[in-house]
Image 1: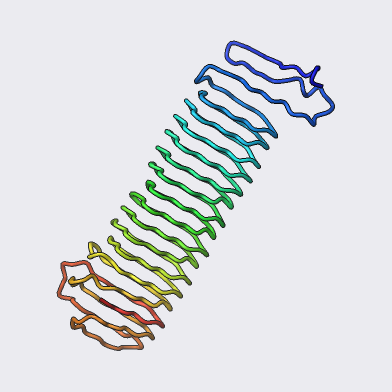
Image 2: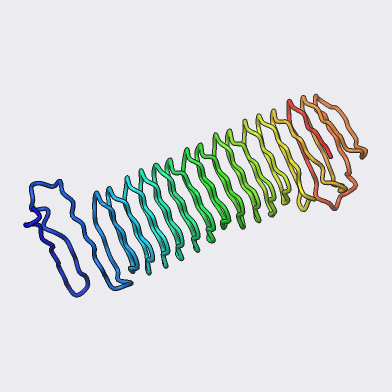
Length: 335
């Protein structure tokens, strides 16, 4: 076979195609290796199967490798990759990067343009991406760090962890989510798991079922959380805050208020830590429940139709208000 195997070169005005005559052989259980040196920055297209493809210092690059590892670095133009069952490694792309892979891990570092990854069954790790990122995954673990543009992630059943990112939208199922250091906003839909958001300079929106929500150091115009059967805990937060929770506990420790806080619970305990040395119009209602007022300041209380009501600081009409309500549980106001 070695004596009869030949390289075939087809050249026209626009491209050079390199292949072999291996399709002429009845026996196919052998490997053909190419090592090709090109002028730096030349555009390339590679179609391969069952072997590794490695490209360095080329221009616009299109690689299809059905069952082989792909390594691409120092790409002067756009990068398109399609593969499965073997890992993908990408470093230093000067334009957009688009990857489609499954049953393998994907690592991308240093892309100057937009990055899009379509992926199934494995891990996706992105670092140092200058523009927008979009990940469409299924059973895909996602890790992102230093993503300067907007971030959009869809996945299921695997963890999402993002650090130092732009405005972020996450649509997940059964996926733990961690976001630390985001800008503009974080918008999450998830279920049957846990979400943690820390150090957010922007708005927070979380919509979930059976979803625990935890956050610290959130400064924005709006915080909106809906969940059930898990706990919600926020500390050092500010912005117009609205929380709806059924069958869980809520713990809130806000910064001095810049906007109103409204909490509506059903079968949900509420513990509210009062901002020190501040007074805000306050009202709490607990149906078939109780209200524990632990502040030294005076308040008014009443009972009507199985409803406990506590009010305080109503004379502070110019300040943001606090309204807490629940049923079949206890509201606690503490220093």
